[in-house]
Length: 486
Image (cartoon, rainbow, N blue to C red; front, side, top):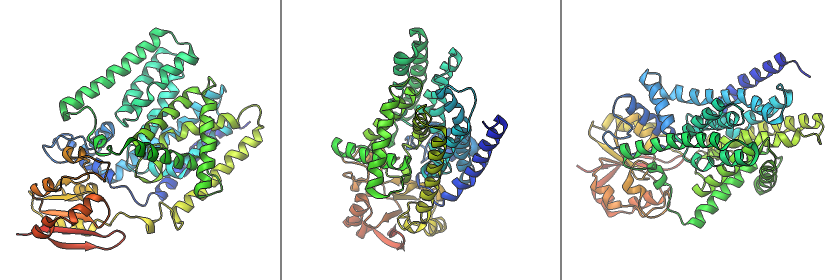
């Protein structure tokens, strides 16, 4: 057995390699991260939790992440540098703690090479590495999820209650955590034999903290749920569930880096991962990991999945799934050498998958496949030609809104309650076109034939009558800027 000091050195080297690996994968960030930046910047400036001054709409998913970024902005650190670093720090801390959780659930006294290899496996996953340096809330949520599970499995009342605090914090990071909460008392009732008073105290504290956040939301925003919830709902239930199941299958196909592509990888991945969760639910040491993973998957299916690349909604449970699979590989029925070889092979396959995503013809991280327009020409033009009271109507509100500071009319509905509650699903609603024109934005930016709202505005007689084209980009996705006629 390797000495503990050597194991610690290997863990440290793993993280030191993970940092540049994660940075290497991220050559493009989603527009949504800039929505966080503008909210955080306004909060730090004393304007409140708003995208547009005096419009109290919760257009971000994570209040806690917004608050952390506002703290960065308050001390005048550049958000574009420090937000990705903060998310990377969260992932690094998670990777450092993960072997300790592996030891706990395996009943060992010290961290072994197998535990570290499982951590390397997680670190090498392209999806985990990409979102670790994204500047989004994904890494923070994953960290809170792992720490809350680790502390709940501990024996002391203090650790149990602390896990409750982390669970409540996780709700402020991702709303899906509300669906995951029952996993903890169910596990305690079925496997731990905890006294009713201990679990009741835990539940009471979690409920109280979460209730306070709902009270704050209602008093501050006038709503119990984020506006993004309403903006992204509206599809028929069967379509939502179908989208969610497809999203889950894509995720499970990426967790196990099989030497296949396409539908074969997806089917095999789902066939291996889902039974592993069921298998783990029957075993005391890992049942909580299975319960949490299952309920998180169910919540994401109910949400209908997500449009962003590399399965970001389910990335936070990847470390838990890795430990579930480790429990199978590290069982007494399998020799240690087989476990080491298996984990090493999965790490290698992950690295090959990362190379394929970064440089492959259909890779999601290949710059040749990006569909987001380069906003710089629009931003420069708007900065040079806009006044302080001007407004712009567009769908991609993040980077343009953050860099120009213009008042934004969000035609996708993320920060606009009226559009968010229009009938229909996200980006496919029955948009109130007349209302948008009634706001008299000076500028309208449309992605040509991209979404229903863009097409609807393009075809509106009011656009041709009241606006004129001033700037157009053709690649990679055509986008046009219109100015209201004088």
